[in-house]
Image (cartoon, rainbow, N blue to C red; front, top):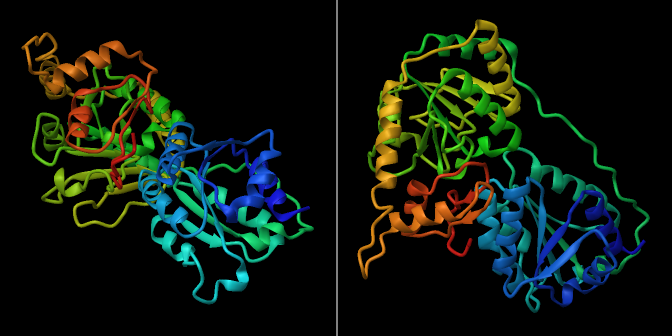
Length: 415
């Protein structure tokens, strides 16, 4: 089988549905092979940066990787901003670039540059295909790395001479695997801390927007009434209409929502990623009692020292906590201050809903009207700039992934 045909077959086997991009001469064989595919749709974009943002948004919405494609040299460099954004926003992505013939990579040559090393700082893994028979292993590894927590971008370079060669290899069948689950004793330890808390709060991060995790989080909050403040990228992990939804945190200055963190004696940091919101902003003294619940161990930071780390599949961890709450007959806390915070924030969001001042349109009024016009499953995309802060504060959500805000790399051009 021709190497470029094998490459496409491997992508099909991995369930890749879309590739966005701008092909060039060095992608020619790959594009001919891709044209024969009835499983992968190629979408031509005006600019490679748009292709990488489109692949990122697909990854954020579905949890599966899409491809973004560029040719060598400037085609590859045009991809890099969207790739970095995807990687820091934890969206799976395949970055596919062409390259000149391997016989001229060792010397100065037209449009030749070290693309793989350029992508290494902004991806989870970057590699070049040096032998046609390695294609199945490389694609299998790339897709798995892209989808493994924390998800992100991976880069594969295919030189034009290798794309033309014949290969004896065949696509590898993807194997389903279960994420590791938390240790029972650690969950017991976390639950003991929670039982003795007076004013616990949940800080929900990007990990909570996974569909199963969001469901278990809502069940947990329904059972306990513990309030949830979400980061920008966790919007919709709980319904905005739920009494325990305390809206969005993330401003660098103290505000109404910040007082929920100030009051808390125990912080359940669930799916929290400090790339979004640095712990110094809510734990400046470093003395908060933190329960870290996430797919991976906590990042080291002087302001983030969890007393307990519940590491493993996030949805399963919450399911285990829900089981303990049920076995105990429920948990109750004094949530009076949480009700006050929700009331004050609701008043702020409704303050300008009827504003009809001529010649002036307040951002609060715009976002109120947009929220009223959009259904619970409609999706709003926010670009980066001052308006992002208004959206984060005043546009709330009913469902996960219905307000997409870039908040890791924070690149303009996202929307």
